Image (cartoon, rainbow, N blue to C red; front, side, top):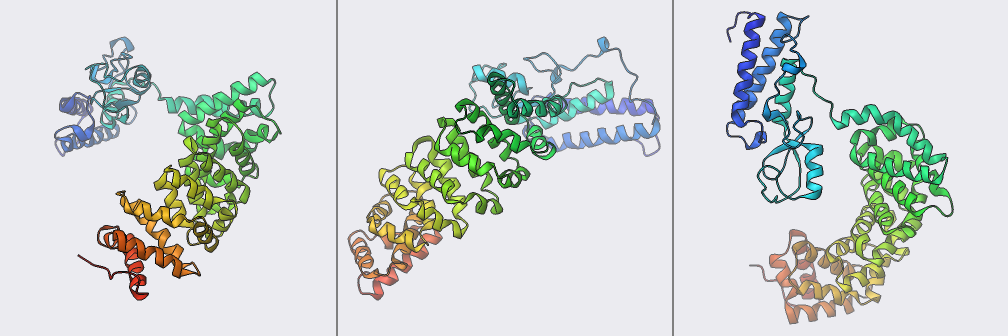
Length: 457
């Protein structure tokens, strides 16, 4: 395009030419990163934007092109979803590389694991936004004065910001049990699907958390209602700026503690997940770390199964604050972890938590009284991931370092080293932290004349 000002007709022709160039790169069916010459696509899109800006300067009061009659607008087939036959609003790419409208392909994938066009079996069900196609559709709609339908996120912002308050009213001041249950289920669904509802709920609705949880303050609450409301709270908690507001509400921790102890399996798991989400914030860990909450989480770990990962991870976060470790040990954490590790359940996660609290003197004593060092040495002998070995040797080190009667512990470690060479092997091939702890143990053994000197190779 020449440097001298161009007239509107020239600019319009130039824009259509650029748009054809962009479409020729991939027909709109691939992600930008997958198209050869993607840098050329980006340059063409930038050029198209410059042309539009120039056109607005030349004709500030007019549209880019004369508005065509709706029936004369021919939407490029590349912009239509093959499932809906309509112009795409939220184009996404599936594992086969094909692009579809998000809500239609999600429905398809609930029933099938194949690509609708190629019938290829999909290696995964992840959906990736097709930013290139989205940009092309936006530009095409602008040029052709075509009103693109709104995305589901935009629609939900308009439809549900008023509706959310109505749902809350039906939950906190129900006209009937059935209506309350229906409203709770709908709110759970909306907070799961739409990020802007999660943000709006906490930031724009006064007293929303209190209104949400007030039905759960009753002595005997409906289990299905409890599950829906706790899961809604979890959905809200995944927004970073919601975490502090939620944790500081005086109803939240008591309700979650109660829900850890009673409720459906789904309720208890989602409760642990909510506490895990909230405990990602430093300031929340002190709020959450009361003994009743910790005791209930530890109880879930002891039960095992579905709850273990979320509960153990939540306790780990809470115990990263040193003053909470005393509360966790007092609440019975050590024997629960030791028993589950002996059973071979979630060993990696539970060893990480045990390593964290093994700096606590009472915790060390309880492990020693349980004879847990034998289990740790057994773990160190067997092939395992470096992190598991690292946490196991850290606990062994802390048990000896903090035990007043170190002689007995060193004797056991010496026997282990002389028979299996456990710490020499670890000093040669463990993680950096594991090497440091193993070498320290070997030095203890050498100093007390109970073991071999470390062999570095």
